[in-house]
Image 1 (spheres, helix red, strand yellow):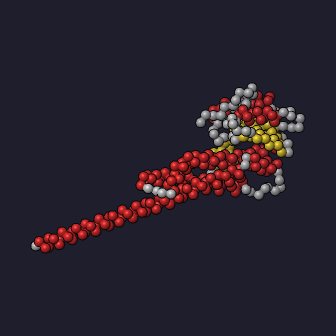
Image 2: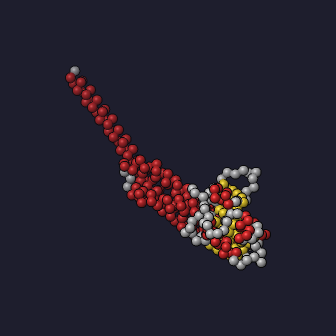
Image 3: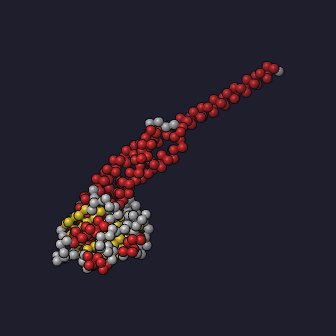
Length: 294
């Protein structure tokens, strides 16, 4: 896949000197990458078990690294440390950075403001504006949200890919015939894919429906706000409803296929028995005729 290319709007989006000049001293761009295999001696920021085991790795990046090494599931995080004397239009400039860096031009970015901290985000790109001593805790909330946002988006894409096949497979849920026998393996794989998506959703849901952390912190509130704006729970519910329809279809296809194969095997066995009885009868007749001849 082609790496994400920032649009040219007059700002050098990943040069440290340009970022300090455009925003504030200490502004950095980091890459959040979720990896299934990692060097355990190397520090990882956060670990996840569901729906897959992985670790979140956080690295500072340069312009050349971003343009050549960005993967589809990477998240670019712009961290802007501020104080009360910083320019009032810094949010607007952060918004422009997100708009220029985001992977999809048709996706609208969201803005969240909470107790002096501000976040501008869309899928794959986040700008964080906060006091320096708050950035680390807010960073953890962003990583937690980004992981489940990406996981749900993968499932949504998989569900979307299933619908074109749904119309082709639907007649087989009503009637299975000899011409459809070669498709049994294909239907089995689709059923397994649907069950895998369902299992992933069921493993994600508990992490998004946890009781609020007490005492309340800025990071916990920001995490809740991100999940709310990202509609993670609603998206899980919508995907679960679609998966239920797909599951029902492939369960029926499997049932019809099993019934057909059982019926075909029974018919084959009956014909074998009939053939054997016929041959036995013929042999008896031949033997009787030979006996009469003698």
